Length: 281
Ligand SMILES: [Zn+2]
Image (cartoon, rainbow, N blue to C red):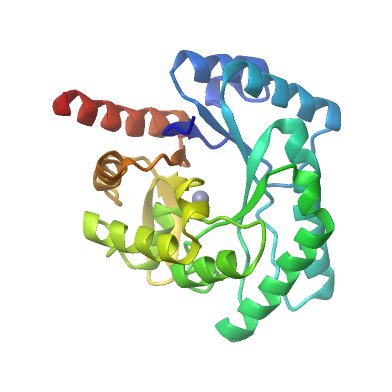
């Protein structure tokens, strides 16, 4: 049932705004995941959401959604905090229409609080969202993402703790963000295994059976993430060791490519796995 999946974040370039064509392209390319980009807010209608859900179902493509960038659960502003919670509630409401099982989001900044205080604020906000709207998602998880900027909430330990302490959460591990956050250190098999180990210890089967990864090349400064870049060229992180781990341990993650041309990144990652499989046979 579970399988390793690859797919792009957002519609392929050549089919922007054309859902039907987009799903055809993914299917023709042998890709089996798609992350719907609602990064500027979920602006679609219920009717259009249903169309997407049906396309995903008929093509066997697993759907996730990237919720709005401007979610900021620990913001100093009450208004922003409230609107952030509302955005997640809306995403949960739309998830079953679209066949979405994972709602990826950025938690936001520390809001001028200490990381510990910020953690408590974020946790209670997510508990509130889940109590109110979790059931609307019909099995969809909220999936907070590892942050690429050092001053943003979302280290490995923060995300692992948050997911362990709150219902309805699984992590989104963005390996490019990890690389940027660690100033390029998280770039080999050992560091990848360490990160996976932290999540596995904290969350067990809930993590192992719901692995959701973002992959991309990236450039960074001392502050962390600066800009996304293609995979497999001059920029890190090196994702081959990650694909090797997946193969060796038997994990079944979904790899979502966030490279500048996401379709290419997804195909590149899929190619690496296929090459490994060939050489093993
Ligand atoms: Zn990401």
